[in-house]
Image (cartoon, rainbow, N blue to C red; front, side, top):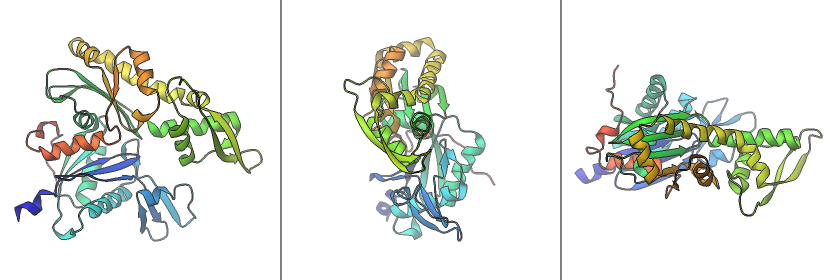
Length: 342
């Protein structure tokens, strides 16, 4: 019987943009957008994940597609719980005996109340015990940094809702900053800029596609152009404009500046010994935002430190949390411990 119990413990990277589930012994088994589509009249969940994401900005009155997490924390508790439950059921087909231990990742700047909400959502979704791990810690473990050694490791995790910057040494976070400027704000900046420059209204998904295709943080050797479709704010009709990546870079300037500022401030607060280590080892960039073209160059340019992009930036937090599940006893110290009280 023991063997069938092995695969139950799981780690969840509950992200603003995507949720990843890692199951012990199996690796990352699920990676879907954190979106829930509900029927507003009955409150019934119609779709979760990829299917629900396709509905964003395209729903009739009776359906809403919501992203239950905002800025890395739970904005809509019930929807989050429904989403978690759905994902757990996806992983554990045999419902009746699946009461897993669960490790959930949270941003490092999270308040006690927000942390409590995450744990509660885990319990409501059917976990036997919920442990919390801070995202930068999980990202560092997942990116393969030697977090338990007495050297400074710096991780910059640019997610959908928050950017986590942390210096880690001896299995703990020495200094960290969590700013609520990340991928979503880059999208919003593109929307605002297109409105101002071309008086063109874009949807969230279009803005995200623009960011992915021609977005950049540092001048590129060739500046590609793209056709962008939206609604003309003057005539009210659909219209297409051609925009170059240097223009999009202008649009992204302000949120990027906030992210770089967070890195600078963290370096400023780092003890000198560790700062010396970071000079040698460099900064590791992870999270979906780490895929923004030229962000590593830009950070190198602004801080003078070597910058490396993690191997799988999108899933390093999930890998790290998964490692906590695999080597539960060894990595117990990195988890935020708290007994469940009633």
